[in-house]
Length: 557
Ligand SMILES: Nc1nc2c(ncn2[C@@H]2O[C@H](COP(=O)(O)OP(=O)(O)OP(=O)(O)O)[C@@H](O)[C@H]2O)c(=O)[nH]1
Image (cartoon, rainbow, N blue to C red; front, top):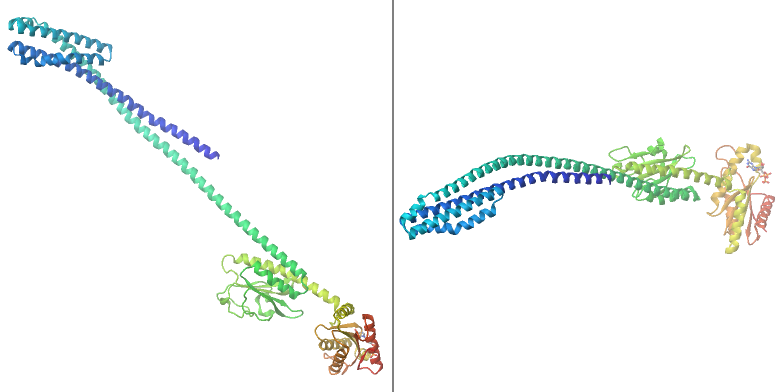
């Protein structure tokens, strides 16, 4: 704004200077014109006097011719002079510019009148009194005196006029010269001023252009920063949602599905596969996939991936770079791959394999997003794993891997309530190893534990999905069989009993050659109506089985 005001002042000043400079030659030209007009008027005045003198002279010549010849034809110029001279004299008087001029014209006018009167007199004499009478008047030299005086005055006036004209011409020449130099100087000054103005305007425009370019660049940077922040915020929101969702999942496997749903939002157009490390193993399972990934094996070894081996991300952009063993398609056919190990607290949890990442500009940005997701997901996954492990520990028996008594009590109540609601049966099978004390005594507790694990394995194998096998306490175990009537429960217990007698109790070392167990079966609604009575009925049947010689299945009463 201030710069614009300055520019306005400069323009106004330049305009004023230019007007003044242009006015000087104009003024000089004007004075030259005045002088020219003066010179012209001078010439005209002289011309008028010359014309008057010439007319008088012609009239005198005509008088002489008439007097000599008496022929009227000679009088024509005289008549002409008498007609024109009054007008010429009048005009001369009118146009006289100074008092001196006016006085001179008056004197001439009087002499012309006298001369014309003398001519008139002589002509009349010649006409009426003859040649001699006219000759006498002419010879008196009165007319000659008039003419001489008239010539003298006009000649003097000519001399004065010429002097005035010469002075005017000299002045005119001097002024023309001055006017020329002033014009040249004015033009030069104008060019100079215009040049300065042009310079100032160019500079101002250049500065404005630079300022505009700077503003444009700043606006561009700002827009980029805003876009980046918006994108980061969007990413943060999605990552936060992802973490919240992973936090709420019931199992580590479900966390993979949550990731597969979030990834297309975070890295659009990028396909991927999530591999998760098995517990106590060097193998990873393909847990989830999104986009249109290339063929990936369902199970991979840690050694199959550069990223897993080195615990650092590994990128292949194509062009013959070494491929990971889990790539089933050549590197060049699926460029822009990135393997990121999922690590938390130095524990390897899995690996994120991404495909179709940018290989040119935008590569770093995508990789940054991918690494952020992998880091955050690994943390969330670690927590999910821990939660899952704690949950398992709270319901599982650590020695056998069967559910513990707390879980059994809750499951029994739940299944009984459901059986009542749905009007279906539910059965319990109590299992007690026969003479287990002897195993401990003969081979030690470690072998006893191994035998317990073998039997637990047999129980797990002998039941359906949805059935619950628990270690109730010591060497006593229980099977909860939902929607299973008494006869079916008995048959199932019998099958387990028979199978048990055929397995090696401790496949890892020494121990008894075979082991047997006794089974007590009770069912809702035939043997009892509530949890406690049902358990009690099964326990009584088990007791009877022991009493009757062990290694048998007995039904509740
Ligand atoms: N090794 C091992 N032994 C256990 C465990 N829990 C209970 N026992 C043992 O199991 C044995 C149970 O013995 P008893 O209840 O006398 O019965 P039994 O020897 O199996 O004889 P019957 O049941 O009458 O056939 C005890 O010696 C307990 O110490 C366990 O977790 N590990």
